[in-house]
Amino acid sequence: MKRVNLNKRIGMGILVVALILGIAACGVHRGPHNMDQTKMMKRITKKLDLNEMQQGKLQVVLENAAFFKEGMQANHAGLRTSLNENLRTARMDVDALNMQFDEIENEFSAFRKTMVSDYADFHASLDDSQRDELAKKFEKMSKRH
Image (cartoon, rainbow, N blue to C red; front, side, top):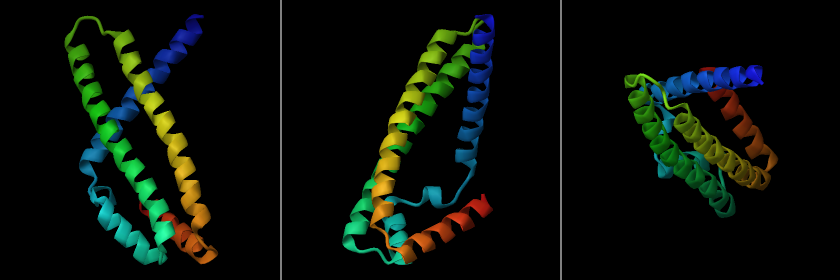
């Protein structure tokens, strides 16, 4: 039983560090993440030569991603505040922090399911040449990052 609690604490510690690094990275990185939806939509539509139906499916993906990003930014701000408050106290409120992380994990899980489904719809609407072009773009992007 103690090993399970130790593993949970280690896992939560890793998650806290990863979240802090992620917050820091998002604040420093300036690139396509700062591009608004309309610019992204125009850019992707032009690169892949999308028709109206494909654009509608892509719009759903972009809107869900933007909605999720706003929610995560609010969650990160709340978590940052909680972490700062807990650092100033003699004893951390582990239960409250765990509840916040649980909420974030639940939101991410729900987002992931929606995003994968919406992206699969968009992907299925593409023809072979568009899929190939999209794959090339992802390869190029992953090499840069």
